[in-house]
Image (cartoon, rainbow, N blue to C red):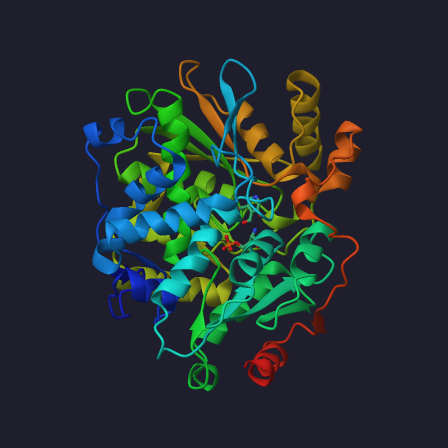
Length: 463
Ligand SMILES: Cc1ncc(COP(=O)(O)O)c(C=O)c1O
Ligand SMILES: N[C@@H](CCOP(=O)(O)O)C(=O)O
């Protein structure tokens, strides 16, 4: 399996190389040269297998010959051994048509663990003895940071610098990052938004002053391996609800478009998906892009769902590439225009290509709160605000009543106790596995939101 850049200029890479590279050298994102399809029978044969075996089967075509089947199975077994639920990503029924796919049973209580527990192992696997250190630079609106830090803390060959927007993540999220004591972990709070942090990360990849000294890697969903691991749970859910004989719709709380793009990949691989519902909060660039063709970034509005307070959505580029004719040169030009003006129109091909599978809905704070209340009062389920945005969109969507609609539950409600309590009157408690999170001492530096400060800090502190 070879991977090519969405901007057409970077060298094509194999799976091991793409995992360590993160972002492509031309500023694009790597995607498989072609989608590897499963036959209907192969998907049927996946029914009932344990999650780690399902993960190995779904990932195998992407990994190519970079891992033997046995080695891949060893890694998936280890990656999912730390989840607190035997099913890894269990389904919970809400009513006749709606299900919740709980993706928060990993060590840091968010869906990011599903991919990052695997990615940490892949880094270890692919970094040879003579490769030196991989310096990860990541941006987080709360969940990627904690999951990535958990996955790589203490690894010999990996060091991580994680940027989060100061004051714009929940206290639980911040503590999950800043209380990890390991010499290879560096937390940085910047003045600014997640978008500012993400832009700095991308700039670091293109900065020769940095790349001449450090080998930079990525844990954000710009890294293909992240998305690959997220494809698995679409198969897991669909197989439990009657797939592949029956089509399933998914509603996905969306920010950086990684999670829902993984659903698109599952569909490209042959999983019968009726619809992917992109659920946004008021930071609704994706809703505007999908419903009106207008991809224009405004300023970020802080909400009760801070991990989705994103206006520049990295993985949307992968979709535009895939549904818009896979023309790297044209997309590079389109993205350059967006980088300069922060606005662009989707082409007709991009709009029509996306419309065949995607719809979108936006939830303001009242609707988010109402969805949390409905789930609690009518179904006895406490949801976090991100999942509630997904549920709102699922219930608004006009999906044939025969089609099950699965909302991805992307975080445990206890990560956002204030918002949950405001809407339901119930303050969710942290599961015992989070230990003494509030007793542990925090460690992070605060930096102004300028690129140079962040770059110099990384250069000055990298081992
Ligand atoms: C809890 C939660 N829900 C939803 C999202 C959005 O996912 P994505 O960025 O993959 O669209 C995020 C962050 O990415 C998140 O942390
Ligand atoms: N919501 C994310 C933002 C980063 O997204 P990623 O999927 O690209 O890592 C977070 O919690 O950090």
